[in-house]
Amino acid sequence: MKTAFFTPLLILCMLSACGCQTRLSDPVTVTGYKLNTYVQISSYINVSRSVLNGCLDLCDTYEQLCSRTLESSTLYAVNHHQTDEIPAELGELIATGLDYCRISDGAFDITIGSVSQLWDFTAEQPAVPDAAAIANALQYVDYTKVELTPLENGNYRITMPEGTILDLGAIAKGYIADKIKDYLLAHDITSAMINLGGNVLCVGGKSDSKDFTVGVKKPFTQSNELLLTLNLRDCSVVSSGTYERYFYENDTFYHHILNPATGYPYDNRLTDVTILSAVSLDGDCLSTTCFALGLDDGLALIESLDNIEAVFVTTDGSIYYSSGMSRYLNE
Image (cartoon, rainbow, N blue to C red):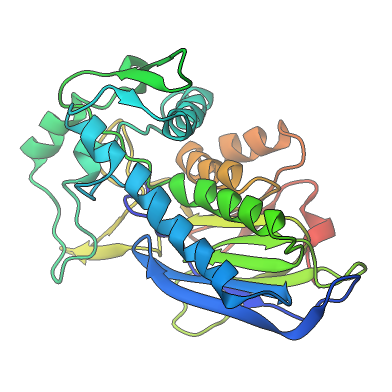
């Protein structure tokens, strides 16, 4: 599972927009280090920079809601049993995560936190956790033991066993991107790009007749070599890959997408899954879910869903597309 709010870099080719509003050839852009990554919001509608700064403020607001590691966050309080009543937004996010746990039959599991906290892929010298510690942590990984009960005040009651730790790092950035899009549209910004450290959400298009162009970086390349480029409008692009955070120990490769059944990284011949969806939260959930399921089952899941497309990349460099992906490819 993704353990922080981090996804692979997507190269943005953000071009000008035109239409009934005042459009810009060069966007108004704000940047910041939020959610443990670099965030960039660019509007092609002439707008006050203070409005865009509100997007950065939203990143802080939602980090306070759903960060596993931030001691002041609501999720931290839940994981440490300091509260069992949570606001509606956090309840709805957890409910969505649990839905994808069920869809994958536990191959994706938001209760992976007891295990993911043992793995530190950002350390100066990352190391494989002690096997006994992983085995102990695995006893707390079971999404079926998390229960949400709606309350009359609109909040939720959450119950889960002592020792269970929710980790929403695999889904939170998609949720936040959707909230930022809602905020932009509320301020009449209909042409924009939201980039939350590689989770990209296009608001509108380049113009009424032209799409934005987004490039997906090729796995394990040090340069900006692209795997593919996409033509997108009102669409999210989210990737999960073994090249995001990894290290070697005793010549063995370890990456950050953990198998809830073993506590160790998945070994399923995949290096990347990229999802296209209208809702970024769906893309975020599906990128990790499909990676966990593997090529055959992951592709079958995508084909069963409406208006969702995907690209799978295997360790030998082979690329597999869902049936409707071709209409987005910039060839």
